[in-house]
Image (tube, rainbow over all chains, first blue to last red; front, side):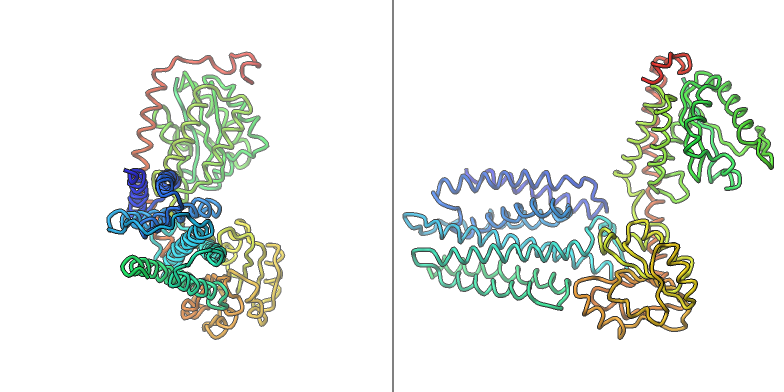
Length: 260
Length: 360
């Protein structure tokens, strides 16, 4: 029953997805506020679901991969609402909603909402570590979305074949800046999240912490790399996020199966 | 009550004739009041731009108003030399009334009657003309409603169709692409290499969109200096232009060089120094100044004259395809407005109202 707000929020993102398809088909970003409205509504419903789940668990709802995916989707929408409006990247929503929709569909359909073994009392540092790390991955996901938009825009500019959607895309320099800022935002959040992990009283999953540190170095390398150009940064941000989400799923799968 | 339109435009008259009828902004309030006081004319708005001069009037006696308006124009605008005789056989005016005049106004504000199909500048010009007329007390219920509806129609046409999509001239394509690369151009520096006419026009268009500074380099330094002075830019000796590469964001090239002078060998080291700043190269020269291979360098976007022209042609095709949709949308609004007009009670003429009421 607690999934009802989640199902409705998924429908909101489906509407955003459908609007994106319509935008590409019609060649006109006709109602720029449409995505903002459906994503705000979807965000409110996601928040309601996470609140219900958190109240039922008595802790931050990050106890299995299902909740991790929903929290990740929530983080992405949160960052879109902050970054998309701040940088006037209205079309970022059009690119974000399909991704969030797919994340939530996978979460709802796949048999991953299995109860986890829980400590009797939640550790606030552990919750902080998990929540901030997932929000950081939300920022990395948004950097990946901005990266995809950058590559698409650059391809059109280089080839001189400007499709109708080209005229609705943000300037390519804005995308490069948004991409870099989202990477920095994610890295800072991940740094704080990992630091919180070291303050946890009980034992931590060494594999997850180890992988978190590996990802931290990868993203640090991307943001500090000199002379690699915004195109390579955009491609790397897509590749790094693909790697991180795959690894996150793999680790959760292994943890659930082998109780690592 | 009827809506009338009498005017000249680029479609009906040459610039020699249009300029005779153009009304400077300073004279617009006076002419508006004079036209508003003509027999049969109850309200009036005058639109005067470089491509059209149109008199819109609300009248309850169309023949009387049109005769008075023709006579007024004949007296006022044809007294100068050489005389321009106005009679119904050779007059450059078109006269429209009823739904045709309403449709014409809606088409004008939507850019369908513009020289550049779908351009949006006309909307601002008509808004300004309406504001001037309203400010002079020359409009009342009918023209107020008509022009407000016209502005809504223009907005709807812009948002619901692709009539403003793309650019239709080489210069505007260049400027639009620059904005798609850099966003606002306020921090961008541009360079003209070889002072040709199209490159100068493109540079002026960039300046009008806020480009921060312009460098001009030409084989003739005097010409470069003259052009730089006109545009508030800086002239550079032709043998030094490539030393300024790292300072510029947009390069407009149109030299008469027989071979490529902008090569990957020259640009590659510069692009490394520029790091994340792109370089937009507009090559208007034939034979081309830029080696096409520079487009392969990261951050370099090269457009030659054919590429720009192809985009402009596609823009025009898109706009032309939208005309039918625009016309259908306009027809619906014309019907609605004409329905309202025929069913609404008449209002007293403006010049029959006391001054206080007219000001209100």
